[in-house]
Amino acid sequence: MNKSLLSLAFGTFALGIAEFGMMGILNDVASDLGINVVDAGHLISSYSAGVAVGAPFLIILRKLPLRRLMLLLAGVIALGNAMVALSPNFICLLISRFISGLPHGAFFGAGAIVCSRLAGQGKGASAVAVLVGGMTVANLIGVPGFTFLCNLVSWRLPFGVVSVCGAAAFMAIRSWVPVLSPLPDTGVRGQFRFLAHLAPWLIYGGVFFGQASVYCWLSYIAPIMTEVAGFSNEAMSLIMVVVGGGMVFGNILAGKLADRYSPALVTAVFASVVVVLMPLVYFFAAHKIPSVVFAFVAPALLFGIGGPLQYIIVKFAKGGEMLGGAGIQIAFNVSNAVAAVIGGMAIHHGLGLASPALVGVPCAVIGASSLFILYHKYHTQGA
Image 1 (cartoon, rainbow, N blue to C red):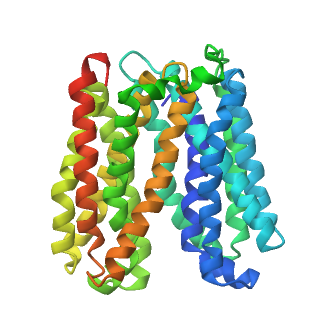
Image 2 (image 1 turned 120 degrees about the vertical axis):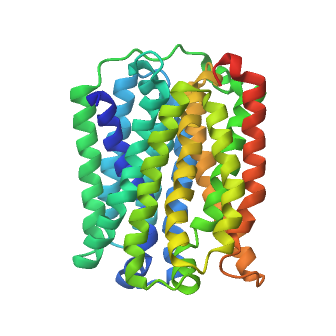
């Protein structure tokens, strides 16, 4: 594997653990700081807020050479998570989580451009899949390991490990990524000009609704698996490994297919499969074997939709490529939050624990429609 691309994957690996790891240890953090779980939940929201706020900072940093920009972002990953690990109280921890989220969208946005420049002819989507792959591997092994360390020692130690991963990404980028010139400066207004066209909005729509279609269900996978399918709480660790494996597989498969066929068509087909899959997830929710199979397939489709779109947004964000790429991560994070709310509303209104799977179907239809329109209108331009 290209070492330059691997160095970027170190960074997204750290980001993936930092983003998703907190979800499984809220009780430990709340107990240690003497707060309730609801307040601890704000630590997840503060990270997402950092993602949303940090991405537009690429406008200020747009003149930096790409390698130097990636080094800066990796440094903030290391610093932010070190601050989390050392936070003495809840307020400091809340601020530290916000800071640790700042480089997230920017790292993906700038990283997608670096991947595109470093990739061989016709290998751009696969190169970006390596970038996204760091996050999928984080879900496969990083988050379970994070939780294990938390249970074994303290919730602070895993964030220290994430900080070390950020430092490793810094050193790897410094050693393996060549010097790359900055993008042509189009000015502040020029950074936003691409948003006047339809294609970026179709891509963002594909990301937002395509991700929400699965996350409505995935947000509640633990109670669905334990209370509906009948798995024990102890089995959830293995089930989450299955989920992570699906993410890795879907990301790699979609990257290879997107290099061979149209990325828009590949993602549209993946989203269409979700339309069929989620009703099956609902109707077979009480059966263990199908539930485990779907726990692999649904996340595979989830990351199969997101990865290629992170690649093609660069083509349709001329003059604001980094901002366009960072926008994918904003859409992804907002989609996750909205999906959890929608899925929770279905449960709250008495439709049953498995009902979020059905709620995801309309989202999949809208996402697939956006991507088919993107393919129909722009496939001749590389969509």
